Picture 1 (cartoon, rainbow, N blue to C red):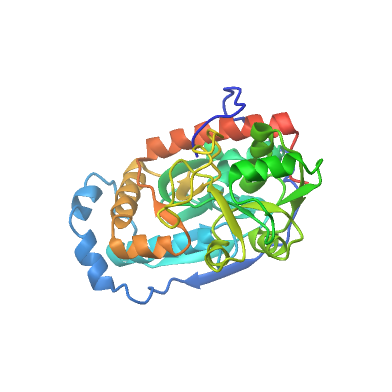
Picture 2 (picture 1 turned 60 degrees about the vertical axis):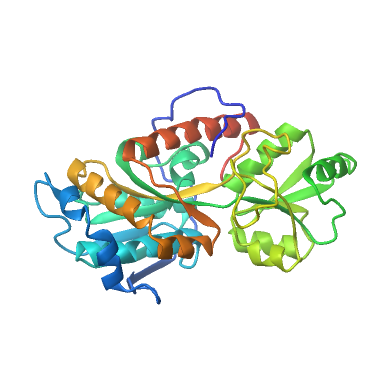
Length: 359
């Protein structure tokens, strides 16, 4: 998520220990990880054994020494959940301990993240989360009980999910330019969907309005799936979709106008980016990565980072991620933290300027 439209350069905020933001329904599902079909543990071990011993050198104690709980702060079946399982299965194979997925959704990921913040910082409780929990939530939930930049360690950026600007069936526009002209001719009657107020697709819609000068009414939903469903039904005009629209684009039920990412997607190589259309820095993609509680030993963080980055180079894992429109983004913990800090500044500026909250 590059670019910095409207950023004011402020540092990510220190968060208040006051009350927790509004409650949402909490879905909890704890499941032992099942290795995906077509990926054999022996094959993983052959791919990953080289360098694993070296990566562990210098650790004060063997890690992991017991099952690792991987808290996923969204519901099962989401793109975050898919990424968590795609990476946790080979981690289990090479590290020799079960990696147990524990879905804790609610309050835009805050519930699951807080579970990890409060966990013993020994590397046996990890978080897999969209970056928005770290980069957006502090601004739209000002009374969060924890500070993501103080209470969590960014360990490994796993995968970046696709972001697609799509419009409802029957809309006459076939390009971004035509769509902007059409929107300006409609006197503010257009609507756009999002998975909820303060979500990245919501902020992307606001940035798009700021950059193009169009007027459109935000329609929030409780999740990306119902948001897309109403676009499919023609009830809402457009959406910045995180990949759920891919089969509907391919079937011709939805129109793909642009990719809201820095580069074109290999899934749609003939579709331009919004940068190419003249709207610079509008990146609505999201990174789903691993985090650990503050205080987790550096040796554990570095070992996990090295293994995740190695796994991301495996063709079978790449193919699995591609099914949800995601691409591997290996980087160091320091690079991951810098990326998150830059995004927090960018999104914080948008939230402030557009007066966005989570209600």
